[in-house]
Length: 346
Image 1 (cartoon, helix red, strand yellow):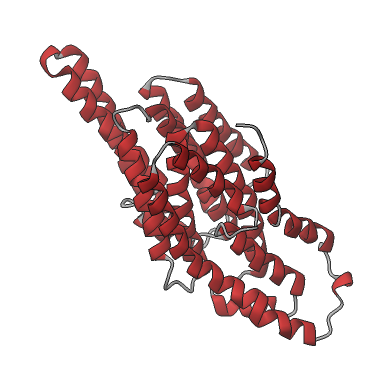
Image 2 (cartoon, one colour):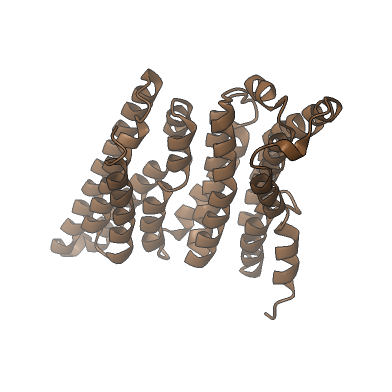
């Protein structure tokens, strides 16, 4: 693909989010979702491998089916305006179909199976875009759909996603699948945060992107698709090994790391609103997912760390040491942010 064409797709993806955010009608929401999908598909096949083509076809089929359900739900909701006796019933059915279509597009549980297969076949760079930026259009639609009638349904989807994302990654040794299940778990937190308040959801999404992009970048440089390949790539790179281990701990929300701050914000709001059941389910899913985060961190810090120290490598001569040290400090800011926010007046 020509490098002069790729900015056009990126601009189109940004415009799709702007179209959804500035519109209140389901037709323009549908149009914005499809613009983002069609602009993202060429990015998926950037390296032209057979696995990427297969993953792109799967992604296109799922997104096309969800788009058809979305449009059908909009038509059902519109037909209720001309049928006085069943106006409320048809409107609720149409809104439910739209919500299910958006949930499928996002990959929330129990409509999450396509996410794992698609991410497994992609390179790390388009996989990072799929698990971060491509969530924005669907979340923008869900934020506008989060009314009193369907907010409880969205809370249910979020709690189930947090549990499924934790349980699904327990036996995974493929790094792409592990990151896909991690994204499903975080997406559950994110959807619950969007229901609680758009500012909370935006804060959590920003933290997730800040933590995820360095991890995807490191794994892309190492070209590690499996834990054993990760061990080989990190054998003679101690600073990157420590950064990757701390990054996974932070992504798991373990205090005092940076990722804990986002979960602390949401849990503080839920406890204040007496949503104790939601808080318990989300915490349970996070504790389960900590197993595979700790598995990678244990390999990077505990297993490989002593070997790298004994090898006598000179860390000062490593490239990008300043950048990686900055990212390492960033991951350690969670406890200080929590302490500072706790001192603010109510």
